[in-house]
Image 1 (cartoon, helix red, strand yellow):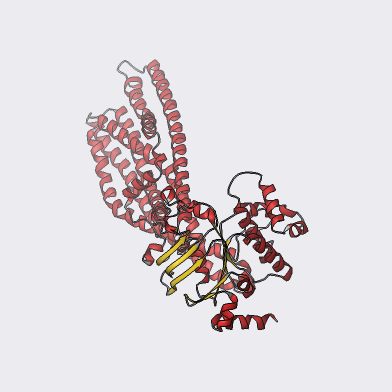
Image 2 (cartoon, one colour):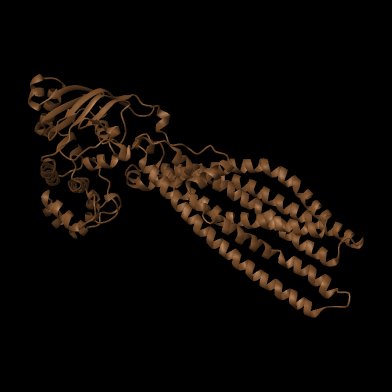
Length: 597
């Protein structure tokens, strides 16, 4: 698989109409009840043109009637026009309600699908884009779509119908003036087409800059402690200022072009009105139009030019929405490299797990080989420790066994079945990875521990039972609020060792057949280290265990030790045998013993 297959797609390359078509395919709820909505919009558009008709009829057949003013007819026309206006207003409001409902349902489906797809992507793919920028694709980019669908979509629908109805009525009153109106707008249409392409390009740049800005800001917030510790606040501020400034410049460039487009529409609209007044007066003098028809036509021109001016702004919002839509579709179109076979996968029944790596190679995108022809076996119910220098590929082995990514070559087997053929839901039940730094969510200790539970039930009782089983009841009882102790954002209220204890309780609650441990040793006080050791002894009992060992005391207690150097398994055997071999492991063990004395 090529490195590009692991990269997040920057944005979809579809055209405007293709993007809209693809977007409605992804979110078909956007089109729910569209026929009824369009019919209601037609009624609303007809309601808007009742005023010009009422004006024409009132002037020509009421006020200027041959026998003198007809008051009753004027009152009757005013009453009918009022009734039609009320019906049109009700239909317009209902159109809004229907579009809001369908758009929210569609955007909910879009957000859900994009968020689900992000979680389906491999760790490698997720790491090709900054977290803040990735989050912006399923939040702010969808918001731009929401703004257009709920506001611009309504305006585009109603205004389009209003232009059609106004044109038909204008042609009924005076085909000459109608032709003149359209001829005045032809140059604007010709100019708008290339301008809209430039607007689209500039809004695409805005969405990219905005995502980059969110990425920079989120990194600075998450890394605030490191920034303060190294006194690099000024340097970080300059980077954020540059990112914000870049976003501002992109938005200003886009808005400058938008202002030009909108001003062009206003200029043409005013020009049309002036031309209609002059030519219409001449037609009135020659008797080709009546006074009422000319007044009605002027009203209709306003109803025609208003939507045309609004259309330029709506089209600009459309370009912004299209830019956001392309970025969201880019996420959805990013291929999933760790493919889930689903229910078609091979059965993998629960029980003591056996794992094998056969001829495994692996390279990170654009990087050198990390693992080369690795052969490794973890017999059912045994414990295997993987040791080696930093960067030797130990953690990569654990990630491959957990199938956070797939090997470049070779096979990872679980009970003889290729992991790529095992349903991911089943794999997650059987194999659990406990990382060095377990991520904690903002909440209580119990809530974070309960993330290991697979099903519904009495969470509190099961969490307490797991704590007791791992011998951590004394530690929990020492906390001010016990299991209700708030852990803070990312678990900042707990020490690194305490966060590791939470991760071990989670693993116990998950009850896996194979436990992968990326052993944590940094920032752990002696008392916590003893608790971790006792909890691990209880957790690993009777389970197959693959440990990325940083302390060689773990390797001493393991059934087998695997030594990895520069991505290659160089030694494999029991601790005593490897010490007697007097090779790489023996040298590592002597160095470790000398440091612990």
